[in-house]
Image (cartoon, rainbow, N blue to C red; front, side):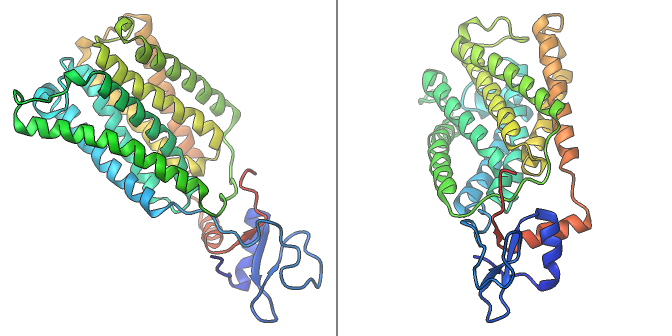
Length: 348
């Protein structure tokens, strides 16, 4: 619903967005176009394009709550894998004998907390959208891994009841979350409204770095996921199940990197940038914790460390590009949140 802005705010809104803004007419409060191309003395509604008076698409309530719930769940999974790394046989859905492998998965879960929590806080769908395709990809792939290796889960009377409960919760989560997320995504994309216009662009060097990052992540992830029995090239030991679980994370990160290039507006990328910073820092901590399990003198180890540095660089650059706006810029954002932008181009 369009909320008309005061007259004194119109110049700032037009200067910031370069688009026509709707305002009450002098003859009784009907909207008229105030932007470029509007004829002098035009009547009510004159000059308004097909998108006139259409508001920005908000994050739907159901999707927002699903993101909040997911942030809590991945935080708990991170505790299971990073805090109780040596006790996955008791506190996790399946046993992980390699502490470094468990810590890698735990780092992924904890890095997902800021992505999903920050996305849930966004007002506009365009600023939260970066989180959803990657999370959907990860949950679908992890469900596939779970069902493929169902015999390795802690199911059956020979496991303690609390461990069975954790395993049942794991199955329920990965059966429910992908379906709910896909449903909410479809509803969200069909909701009325448009995206706020892009306010900045990623520099070319950053897009190139992200493209290289996405390519490397996708190649490694697909190799682990499709050929888990041949994962000896990875810089630490992996069972076939862990190879596929690790590959699921890498593929999801590749999706996020490619999606970042598509969005290309730092304002829309803050959740992903926060995760891109958290993940390599957490993984560096896991290497410091378990240095003897990492194959340092292999080409793959060098590529892995280079990838972590690249993720740290791209995440920092995006956050720097999308740093909090000045007072004047914030005022323009607040105006845009409460007015209809007629003919605003969300792909600008």
